[in-house]
Image 1 (cartoon, helix red, strand yellow):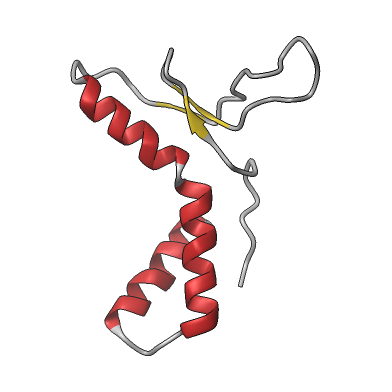
Image 2 (image 1 turned 180 degrees about the vertical axis):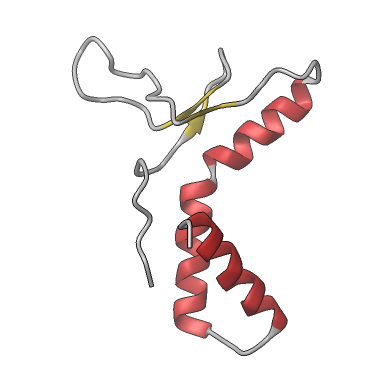
Length: 93
């Protein structure tokens, strides 16, 4: 199974702006800042914006968990076909 080649998680959704990504701990100047990998566009509905941001922030962990489930319990079912298709989509395959 292919490995995710993007910015490693965990990612967080900012509470103060629209950025999503891992928190930088590289130095004293950037500690606690998000290294953005995505932004959620403002659409006038803060609940939608927060829900979309949280889903994107969970993406690395969701992918890792789905890969683990398929690895240990792969079945020839429609549900596992959907899981494999989602993994392939996330990996750009």
